Length: 382
Ligand code: UD1
Ligand code: UDP
Picture 1 (cartoon, rainbow, N blue to C red):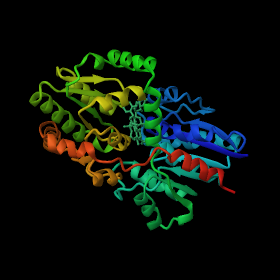
Picture 2: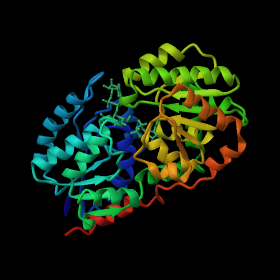
Picture 3: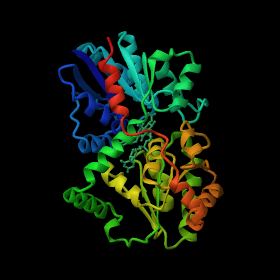
């Protein structure tokens, strides 16, 4: 029996690790699987655990209101010591680029436990953008023994850093597995569809009541490097878009980070066609994404999901570790310059040809079998 411990802490990690958990659970005679959540996020993590019916074996419950990255690092590192000593895994699996990812990898390294890094090899090569994620993922690569790279370009980044080819496998991104798993669950399930409708109605944006031709701009934003002036620019841009397109509904599920909520609520709460709502459960969010006309976001995961739903996506970042989506034409980078945001969103709303070009582009992130490739690799380890 191989003992595998999966560790994650935030909403996107949970979404992207859920398919890996489900896949490894298929082999109970080969793999003894345990799940540890750091709960770097609480409510937003719990929403995902519930959707995917995951019951963690360990819950470090570290989230504090308005925590900083020292708090997260210190608490994850200290609490993982005991978990690792008790669980004694042969392999710890971490995901992506959060501070949970880095600190849990370091904790495993200190007990000389092998680390497998899911979604390895993404790079902007600018350690301050995204901050601190670029450094978190570079450090995770240094600490990991096995690297599950979503794309060939991600693998090449790792090879350039001297990581041996035999320790890297190209898997696709597990976010596609999660998306397809959830879409299949929703399809032909009238009970779940009714529950999603009810969630949307209660959210403050009554999606079931809007007409089929209603145009919707879906917005999300939370990046640390955008706090302060960046978020003020984003809010001013949204205000202007709402004014120029009075018939457009702007729907913004606002991240629970107080640094996001303060400017967003202060600047945007009184505008008639802007709907500020709470973070949505994953199924409802996917449904809203699929029904949106354009997405405006600084999220990593949403850049990977939106091409599968054929929704043109404007990304409020200056650079990206997800260049494949830019090259495929599914996303456009605009940074947080107010005028650039307004121009890019207006162009998509006004110009049917450029809209269609972006909507038709193919998703470069995989075929929904990433989790199986990861599980097969682990099962075949000596
Ligand atoms: C974190 C990750 C980021 C990831 C993002 C996904 C780090 C440093 N940042 O950023 O890489 O892209 O999650 O969303 O690892 N809060 C709640 N409830 C929740 C979640 C957050 O109240 O369920 C509030 C708390 O006040 C918390 C604050 O948001 O202190 C910030 O959470 P934190 O995880 O530090 O940062 P994020 O911006 O969420
Ligand atoms: N998401 C969600 N509910 C929301 C907003 C986003 O379930 O209200 C999902 C979304 O589909 C994607 C993930 O959360 O899979 C993205 O998380 P986030 O933007 O917080 O983090 P990032 O991807 O930037 O690390």
